[in-house]
Length: 297
Length: 325
Image (cartoon, rainbow over all chains, first blue to last red; front, top):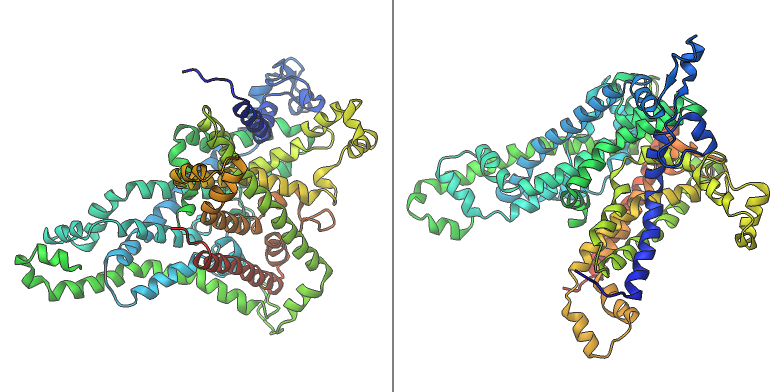
């Protein structure tokens, strides 16, 4: 394919490239810094990838190691430190446990409720739907203080329960699935009932399979939000490092370490940001649909 | 059950007609019950609790609790640090919303006009939405570091060039470029910049979706009517047709920027001189870190009032004004 030169097109590209440079700047800083030695970071040298010359690690020297023993490769040193200076694996595991539990519970609660609102006639259904619409207006982050107090009264702060419980019901999830179920033909449900299926079986064996695209989009929406969430874990996890989620772990890393640790810190930031960014690059359409889901209202 | 459905299965229906209605009603209640209980416990009860606690001097761990009426609210509206809180929050929102919305719209329009590379730019601009804001905030802090950061280093390279005609730049060269996050005159603007950087890609995607729903024959009709320039096309067709998208984009950007916390907590702690003391951070600092629950609860209620006002205004606006289809 060939395109004729057009001033207008070229101009659009120039503006968009300038924008892209600013958008990508911190990603470049993050990755490039994570590859460099402290000296290169301090002097702003080393280009994009750093020279990767061996350097003597400071902690190793203060522990009495000889200079030859302490020589390390900057990139390896930074990424090793990200895992040894802090329990990074633990943080990542906690992130996975929390995000997956939240999504599983949200599905378990929202799907039956959405089915009831969409397809069953019961007393108070309109009021129930009005409640869901009202709850859509309340951002959970805004009511963090009373939620925190309630959890503290129950003795649940500093636990997985504190990280997960407040997110088990998603008014948005119920709303979204309800809108989707509305489009499923009643005949399908009637046929299932004729076959003797109970309402519960209908939900999981008839309704859910038709709703896979909506559920997948909601999964991405939910997982991205909770993997990246910093505010809520910050509030309910105060001391116990073994419960830290990845953003909390990174914050701790920043608080603990001063000047010379930019290399390992940027390596940690890269490790935390990479899973979602890679998943996004692999399945862009789905991710964009999922995250902009709230735009479908 | 619809009439059509009952007609199509008329024969075996007889014995099901009375029973299924009751069974359905019971199933509906049972299936909605867990969600109902959780919605009440997790979303409604806390709002009520915050409302009650905002009129007390409660602190966590102390058995006694005293009713103080509206004193916490009076404190908020008279104390100078709370006035700074309102100013910082409103200024942040006022800075971020228009910039983020117009950059989102601009990016969407430019990208739509391209022959090649649409998805390339879309991917790049969407990246900040995906990446952990806390991680990226820490990276921005490093990039904006007064001596080590890439931003001031790059600016310093411009010294001695014609850029020095610009007084601000000349001052930077002579006395050093701003500390950004450490300077009370720049901190909030710097945070707002990070906020825009992070959010405009989201708005771009919403606008791209909105643009695909503008019927293309409208443009044909307009050109027949003599609408020639791109600006006129935008003003007469694109912008009005994007009305519903814009209302939604503005609302969601507003609500999100009201909730800014990650960058404030990690980079400025509300300082310097309370210049970045936004509401959610104040709730965290007063209500949780300092255990002044009554004050924190009062700020919570004020915050909820702001957010609800925006949402209700949006719903009103959508009902009244945006009727294009």
